[in-house]
Image (cartoon, rainbow, N blue to C red; front, side):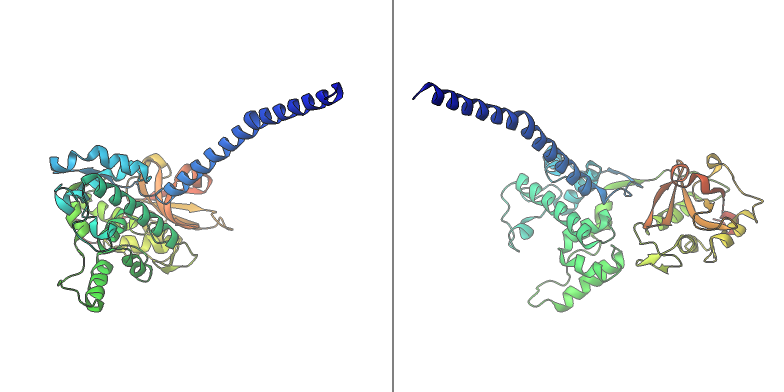
Length: 362
């Protein structure tokens, strides 16, 4: 090998070395960054279904030590399967309902994991992992089918099986006690060789809720009882994620802002017209009792806006105040929580209390 050949080979080695450095110091970090972004985006998408499900503070109660001793393992698999921490009280309550902590199958997961076979789970950890995996699968399936998410729907599907989601898709798109009962009766009537007098537990949610404190802070206002306010807010939240459609009044398929408030307050005997302007006139006595500051609003007040579409001559939008500067309302694309100042600031007209329209105050 002559000197020229040696120089050429050295040059090739130098170029190869630079190429390796380029991969290590440039392409690898970029690949890592892209991977992190993909993971973060996936997590965001996983959790995005749940952005409105913060209305209730849940805490577990009367959970036996036989369940509590598995709390660390439950949290471990909740995180493995990206189950938000706020559902821990529901999951502890579920384990208590399913088995009271009796091992090994504390979540009664054997039939689900082993195609209907009972007694196959060999450890509490195996039961816990499969239960959290099912939670993740159910949440993803609810999202894929574009059903109206609720923790009740997750729990009831865990009890009934995924066939319940097919039923829900054609019966209101959300969990209700009524469609849980109708699904159970349907399955009982159609299953062959079923040796039981019922299918699943139609009272599964109520049974789990025996082990939960579900709290929302209310205050007495204008001699209206907390129970009345709770009825209004609970009814309002039952419409979460119903699609918005101008002039719509056919939940769970569509609804507009004034149909939403009309239906909510009908629950306590107030009969509003399907018109934001008419509701404004009724609640505020044509503006005479208008609360013009957000700080003056109280939970359950109606909140009014102008100019949310091409007119400023009359009230164009209405929502229900839920505290902390926020309201629940039907807006594009769905019924959701909104920040009054940040989302509607320039359009805000004021609010008013509807309680004087109740004929018989509680």
